[in-house]
Length: 531
Image (cartoon, rainbow, N blue to C red; front, side):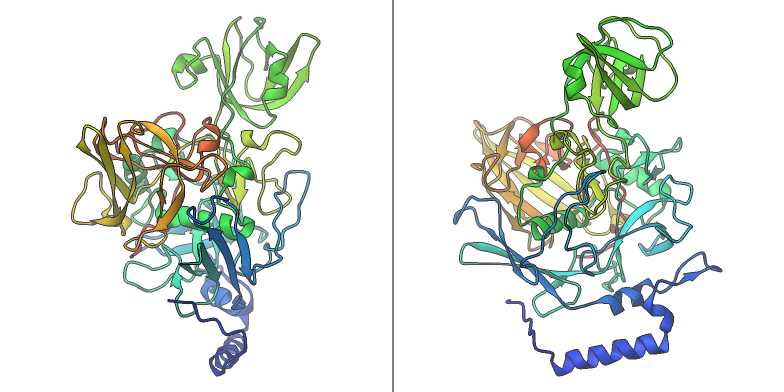
């Protein structure tokens, strides 16, 4: 169905406008967020967001692969002429979206109750907000949104608005399990850190907990926090994919940034005692980045205990170049190094992008952006760790010695998530691209994507003949012939892998409970939902 958007104000629009005026008149406090000191939370955010609606429709046309393999699209409707340039810690960049209601986000503290309702306890700038966990979890809060995806004349045509028009549907996760709509949406800006009780949190300045980075632990650890929480969902993925395509008219997230090429290791050249530095080959000075995270030990396996025994997850504070070597300084207590200790890059700590001078971007100007996380809509992505979906299960099926396929199953209510396929999991209408004996167990670049009819917002990659510069510019790894069975679906990508990673990347080779040092989970407040 075509989206019906009449730019001339109709009688209904006039009624809506009058209604808004009367609402504001009857409840003046609705024109600004109101904090109820007795309840300890904001109590009018739904009305506030409603009054902010402007009805504008932002579009982008992305070419279908069979029409053009160019990953870039064309902005349409109210999106024409709008620009978003990546910011850094020292440069702001142009951002035409930051104050538009459909795109403006607010960094907040808050909780999710057992029914999935979000309770905002602080907003950045109100004097109560804290990013370090001292006032609870950090979230990105946005207004409700509505979208449509249609196809015509060789293009996938995406439209998005803060107002629902005929032919549009609510964003994934916007409906509660009973079918009513949330008054706002929240997303976790950080990978999760878990406390000693394995309860996950969304805090800045933490080493994320990789054990939270599987389908199963994303579910089980979240339940320790409350029934309304879960790990990453389709709703969280789609919001980022949609914002990427709308704001930048591209499917290629890595063209903007993201830590997908930060794998190097260097050996210590000289032993020292009681120091906060390592002496490394001169090349390390140009490779490692101030603010990034390193480990050091006598083992080249950076995820092993011995690979972190000299120091673990330290932040680089300074790098000094010398005539024949360099000194890389890290925070924390002094340590003792040994010749041939390995110094290895690791995923970045949470909050790396907190000091950007704009909405989107990466922290360090003048340094390779493929070694740094990227922030989009206040959300840090591609931090050096794969992120699993907790609401999707892949069933890898071996059809024959030369063919296999990957079925997709979705559970819509996080209170019913499980580590096995049951009646709460719906078999979807789409599958990952088919594999044969040559493509099984190989990274294959996607050509395009298709939205699932049974799971709106799940953009399933199609085709396997794309490249790093065509189609989605991202790749899928699956091995249904050699490794059939239930698998988790990992997204975005790890510390290295380069151009294969991005907003449309997927990896389905690991079991539902598997995690490793290059994995990380993320809290979601959108799990209690319906299709």
